[in-house]
Length: 147
Image 1: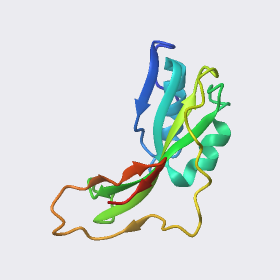
Image 2: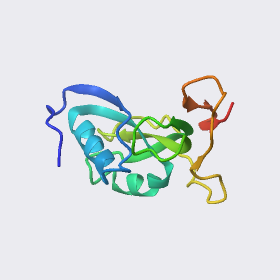
Image 3: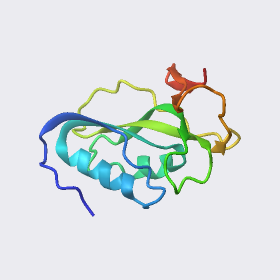
């Protein structure tokens, strides 16, 4: 499985690939294609639960300098598709930087592994909240804080 892209045509890629929940490995296909298409770095969003797998395999996928988590966020995903079974779900997501050329200066402080005691993916009803959902939270000192 691969995406037909021209190699090394851009400096940096910023992407929000599918999380690979419905089609296992879909996120990896996007990461590999992005790494192949840039000369410097890929910034990509992934479920926090896949952090260890993503970081352990970054070099194998072509990121010569590996990968690091820049921020942990919470996405409030509303029910958008028929296959969504919950009205809304909070999904913990990592912003990961893949160092493609291996020479980029370290401008980040990797986050520790996610704490197992932290709240996992939970659903809740957002009726009357006044909004469509989407990303909630902001980044402070490399970590996401709920508003």
